[in-house]
Amino acid sequence: MSRAYRILTVLAGIMGADGIVLAAASAHQPDASRLASASSMLLFHATAVLGIVVLAERAIVHARIGIASAFGFVIASALFAGDLSLRQYAGHSLFPMAAPTGGTLLILSWLAVAVAAAWPRS
Image (tube, one colour):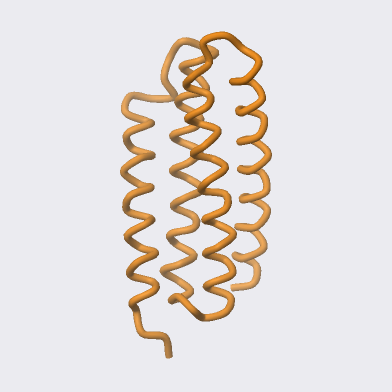
């Protein structure tokens, strides 16, 4: 599991950096409100990924379910933020329903965190 923890930590760092870049872009560009939402989504869920890694590593949550939810956060945030960024800069979507798909995956990932916390650990 330590390799998965390391990969997730690297991905969380990249998500955080991307969130800061989008926050700066939204602050310095007129009519860039979509980027502020994408920035918040990335920054919040980068922190959630780090939290899940710590909880799973310390066996506070069921490790496999927790890690699955953390990867869900990464994928879903990428879909959501990527779609909003493309709409801002290219004028089109990543693919039809990309942001809602990311949002749905975020909901499911948060529910998986709840299951991981409730699941008995051996």
